[in-house]
Picture 1 (tube, rainbow, N blue to C red):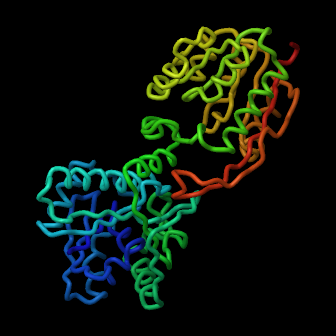
Picture 2 (tube, helix red, strand yellow; picture 1 turned 60 degrees about the vertical axis):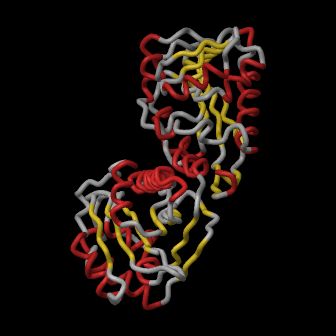
Picture 3 (cartoon, helix red, strand yellow; picture 1 turned 180 degrees about the vertical axis):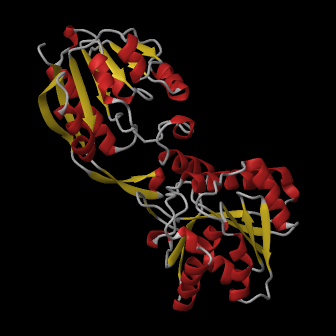
Length: 398
């Protein structure tokens, strides 16, 4: 049995997996570190002392300005195969939900690679490649782990020495991906196993936009979350109260897979549901197939500001988090906007813009839903949903 630690960069092996390198599970043997960013396999001899093992890793630490990325499942499969060298192995890697997306991608890709290796070996496979993920750096999620390893004082001292000596340049780097700070140096190393569905949901949950977020259907669990159901029901009722269906069509900006769209259509609204992401848009179109009251469009906010359909109101519900130019709202072909965001985003992003805008006046500000702490990904983790505040904005002079 060999312990294989697959990490993005070498410092990760010490910061998140020191217990594996120095004190493997019962029955464990020599350890090997695979550096995904460089395609390097670093064997750590079984008879080496802890200090000698760490000394073998130290020269491979790079600066915070050096970029790093997963080479993909196929390349990682080759690296793991080389490291195992025909032996059964336990593979340890990053969490798919590591807030540092480069690490999360390595964790996801490594698990995919190991599953592929097991399939290709078929019935003759040795018990190769059980995969465990480190909880690692997770400022937004709390994890239910399967294996916790508190470090002793000597192990913590070794980890801090490595951070202070080998990683000295990373202690004050400006790179948010590679900076080494207290929350990234755990004194208890925590690990969990994940099946493919759980792994993909964890990876998608921490994505913000794009194909990563769309890797699974309903990545934010609108269909199963009590919080999200309450938020969506309250939002639909809020829209209906200020703009009943007979006033004309609504334009929903960033409709995702249509969780709010379906509620609005059921209330009798005609809806232009816009979604630029092709994966979400395909699911939206499938969900609304046969509905005569919903038109699915691909426009983003800039496209709608330039040439969008006229609407009794435009809905910007939980979507102004991504640096959009808020002045585009002035050019939307409507006199009524519904904007919903978490309270902090209202305070720091929307109110300053409204204070400098002569185009809109606030008709109402209301709390749509209170914060709630909820489990996600089948109970593997939990997080705080931060509440939603809605503002009704009417064009000045309308």
